Length: 193
Image 1 (cartoon, rainbow, N blue to C red):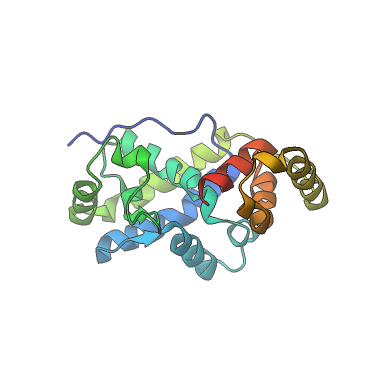
Image 2: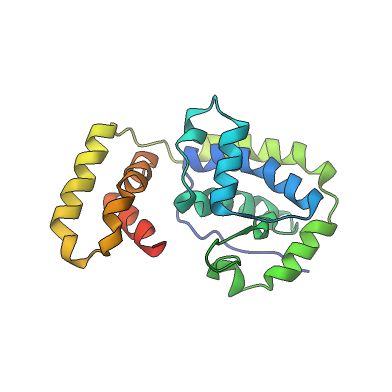
């Protein structure tokens, strides 16, 4: 089967690469046990496994797809089964539209479950080293600035925003701290309400 896909995102940040490196072993463990997780469960498992890593503790499910895209690029470039198909949307119970529009996610998961991943880990580690060197440098924004940016955007666009967005302020701030611009952060959170 041809597993070739293009990246869903224009640029890869250092945070994307760092979290992909944390998520990949979780995906391979899921493959070995023939199991799936939701985005939220993936992020929580990573937090449980890496309590000492601040960037893991700041991770949120809303942006997990971006991090998984780094893994998807790796598997696609090597024509390996797409291990990211093991992560599903909690509400839909299936992969996102980027996956379901182009592939049969159930077949992808079967391919992932049946693949021998034991010889791929070292190659992934080398890929991550290169990806870290080539990633977009992180944007340095202080939390207080991200909070102000969130409040300012909310005030300016409140009428057009979903009512429930105000209860997701911390997710928006976290996305801004990851390097997303304010408008994109609000859009990402809105799409998941």
